[in-house]
Image 1 (cartoon, rainbow, N blue to C red):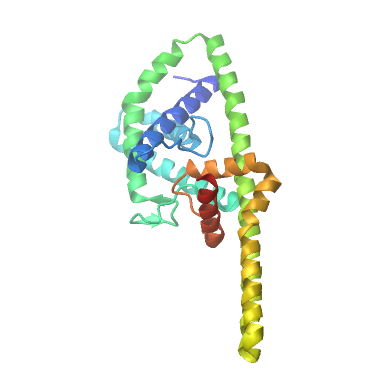
Image 2: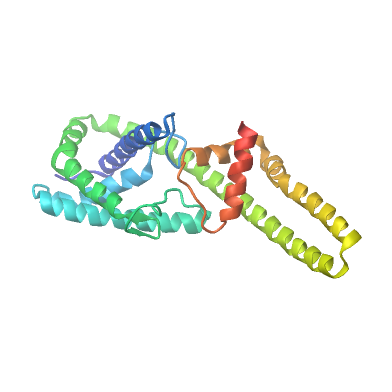
Length: 267
């Protein structure tokens, strides 16, 4: 069966939504509280939509062979997840999902458990689930389908643009915190060396100076918040709350500091 461009887009949006439902329910149960899961603010997870489309493209030619569907679907979706994770981390300096604690993981972006889950998902999708969605869409009025796809495209594009902007803002804050921490450690080292030579009064002055510098560092988040506005600061914090497993390997100390001050500010 041949799909139109609008049909493919509808499938993509539908599976983005279905993935959001699954992830949100799963993470909310684990955290024992509601978690609006995902990179975007709306109820869509593009990695699931993209994964579903990739799986369908590579498995539909032999959709009745469960073994091949499992292997090809697992491989294609795992590759997609890995390269998506690598690109996002390079762009935003934050890893929005992390499998580092899982056994047999590759750079924290993929792991065996996740890959096997993609394989099972591929079999369920290709052999069973997609058939129902396909029938529903094919019976839909073509004009109605195009209107729905257009509205969803506008909404998701705006949401994605805003989410990307928030991620870049967070990256800037992490870089600022990193620079401030480096400067603090550099000054601290000089004070320690000077204190070792001159001791006594200079040591007391050094410690007082360090306390002042540390206090200034404490205000970095407040300055960042005022520079980006409180609203932007709240959005950056919300982005991380939607991704409770997010980490930053590039700015571990700064990321940890941001999370601590963010929690204090929001509490």
